[in-house]
Image 1 (tube, rainbow, N blue to C red):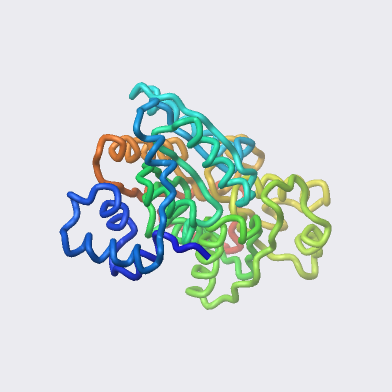
Image 2: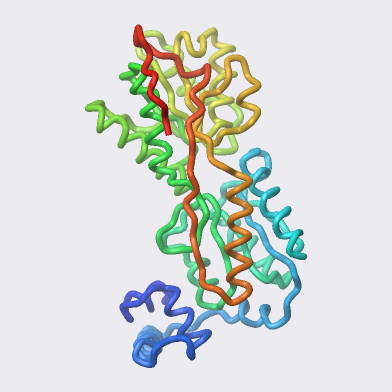
Length: 340
């Protein structure tokens, strides 16, 4: 297996960003550090892909964006934030989608690079150890992640784990003790995995058992029969369901309504995203709200800074809880304290 920039950084005892600077802008790195990086690269026979460096030789005022899909309004709102901000700076945007298929990420990135984009804003399946991100860093192509909460790559996101914990805390504070989580495929999204960790955190701190998540394909628009049976069996169904995103919550609400299960009288539901359409439902959707347009705008600001020669940077934006009609208290006197 070919060595990656991550391997070089680990052997040299530096960050990935330092390796990138040592290879692309050696004058900005101390000689001793540069020597360690070059020695590590030689030891590992590391050969970076120079495509990005070649394409950056001429500015095109084009930015590439890679998102899972545009059916989910979350990504549409993010795209709007990116496009509006980029246009104000004189840039145009090219968009490609992956449909939550990690195998399509390389094709999307390669296609955008072939269009000579100056930089990339993208959401990937899993940021940790992603070889394409390492290659971008090494070849000097500026990029910014959105929604992936990563400690090793420049990103703009909410704290997925902490935000999910707060959403489940709402249900626990309302007296729910049998809370399940419905999520898309954990293997297709590190955000989903982080949110499941937050679900577990909230239940464990309350002394409750966190169960294995109910998983469906992110592109599914109907509940599989076994999951529907689990949520409608009056002998076994939970009193509350935490959904990994709002679209899943909408899918569940329709399926339960058709099955004669009342929300929230029979089962409470909390989503994650804060889609505006959720407020138009009856009852309104309780959810963890993330600032999707702001995520896109902040990603552009960070990317523009990198395009102008500045350092890479990240932002973790605040979330809030919309405690509306689909989350009903089981307590005689619901708690009145404010939620974050």
